[in-house]
Image 1 (cartoon, rainbow, N blue to C red):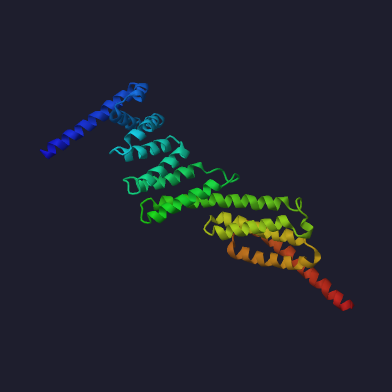
Image 2 (image 1 turned 60 degrees about the vertical axis):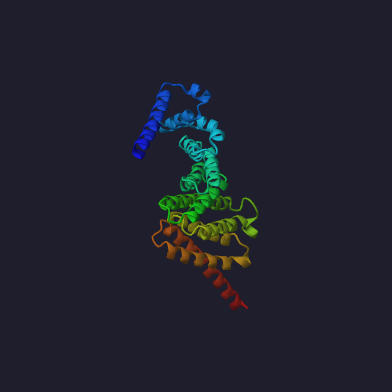
Length: 295
């Protein structure tokens, strides 16, 4: 008897979905919006979702949320709404509703997926590196919270991949900032008396290397050569009493660069900087020696 009842329930549910899909295919969306048969309307929303008509699915589900809240359909309807928005590329609303889901149903059936897709929706909205990266930082935090909550999730490799991609975007932002400082050179501020732009380039690049030690090798290489370039330029434009010290710092930076990137495409440039810095130090040493002899 139990088997027969179960089969009957499945048949009725399947029939409901078929009827809903039939209405969907007949273009009866306006009638569905006005319908007071909430269960039928919900099945139609699911049918729209299955057919990839996410905007219509979202519209029906929004109408149903308050009605279905507290029922057996409440949890699923909120998750399905968030998925409809995500698949429809309405990422801002998707993030908010995924978050609403896992806050409303902390032990819900879809809570793990909701936390992941909440972070992924933020990821989809992150801007190009030249723009403000606040949302990138927020997305990284959301993915990290997800991994902290579910350290053994099968979605871990994907979440980590997203975090690395977001980190690369932040590193790219820092690369652009460092390059901007370098390109400004002595045009803003008086680099002859302090070299503020070159120093800013060095500090920006060093901070990026410290904050993102696992960024792509090509980014680390670019940041490192920018530090070497900036230190050399800073030395050449320094006042006399600071020049030798800064050329020596440039030489030290060269050795660090060559040690880290022995086959870098910037090796020739780095060696040219090294030779120029070395000549400057030797020249100063020779001048000092001659001065001592003249005394």
